[in-house]
Image (cartoon, rainbow, N blue to C red; front, side):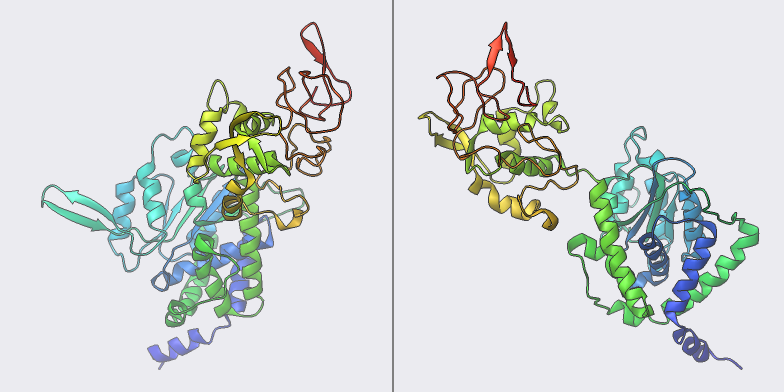
Length: 454
C-alpha cells in the first residue's frame, strides 16, 4: 500500500531538469518560440505558478506580437494546460478579477488574459483600475481597499496572483516592467508545429501539469527560503527571482540558461522600448553637450530640436521645445540654469556639464560597448545631431568642433554666434552650426555646399 509519505518521497526525487526539459519539448510541439531565452522563460514561469505560496513577487508573463497569426494565443493555450489553477479570459472587469483572487487568496488562480490589446490598446478607453490591480498584484501584501456602504466598513481585497497577458503590440510599461516579455513572430517557411486540440491534447498537458505540481510543491519550503544569485537588480530581480530559484532547484543546465535568458530578454525589452520623455531628454542633453563644459540654454534647445527623429521639434505643440520647457523638465532632477559669462563677453542663462554628471550616471549610464565618446544613446538608433559627419557610425560628440568649450555658433539661419575656432570670418557674419564655417546668403537663403546641414 502506497502512503502519502511515499508519494512525497517519489515526487521529491524527480529529476527537475528532465521534467523541465519535457515541458519545453511539449510546448515546442505546438508553438515555435522566437528564441531559446523565450522558451526558458515560459517553462520557468509555468513552473512558478505551482509555487505561489513561496514567492514574494508574482512575475507577469507578457506574450506580444506585431501582427495576427504569430502564435501568441496558442502559447497562452499551453499556459492554460500546464499552469496551476488557470483562469482564462479574453476580457475581464476589475471587480471580477478581484473576486476571483479573493475567493481563495492562499491559493489564487493563474490569470490568463488573451486579446489584452483590447483592454489596454489605444482604443480601449480607461482601464486604470485593471492595470492598477495587475501592478499591485505583482508583490505580496498589496491589497486593494474598498468601502462597503452596506456594512459601513472598509474591505481588503487581495491582488497577489500570477498573470499572463497576450496581445498585439506593447502592453503598458508598468506591466511590462514587471514581466518576462516574449515577443512572438510569425512562423517561417519550414517551421512546422502540430495543431492543438483540447480534447485530444489536453490530457497530455494535464498529466504533465500534475507531475510538475507534485515536484514543485514537494520543495515549497526550500523555494520559500531560496536566495538565488541574481544577474539583475531592482524590479527586474524581483520579477526573475522565482524563475531563477526554480532553475537552481532543477539543476543541470537550467541555472545557466535561466540567467542567460533573464539578461537576454531584459536587453531585448530595453532595445524595443522608448525611454520616458524625461530620460530621453537627459540622454539627448548628454549628446548635445558633446565635449563642452557649459552651454547656453538656447544652444541646448536648438541642438535638441535639430534632431529630426527626436520629439523636441513637436513637444509641446506647436512651437517645439522651449528654453522655459527645458528648465521645467530638468528641474525634476534638481538641474537648474544659472547665469554664465561666455567668452564673447555676453551673459545669459545656461547649464554646466557638472550640473548633469551625477544625474547622467544615475539615470542613463553609458553603454559599455561605446565608451569612446561617452555619449551613446540607448533605446534608439545612434543617430547624430546636426554637425556630425553624417555616417551614423557614432553619436554626435562635438569632436569636429575645436575648442568646443566656448559658445558655439547658435544657428544656421542668420543668428550671430561665436564660433570658437580659428576660421576667419567677418564680424557679425553668421556661422554654420554644422561645421562652424561662415555662411553666405543670397536673396534671403543661404548656400553652403560643404556641409550637409545647409
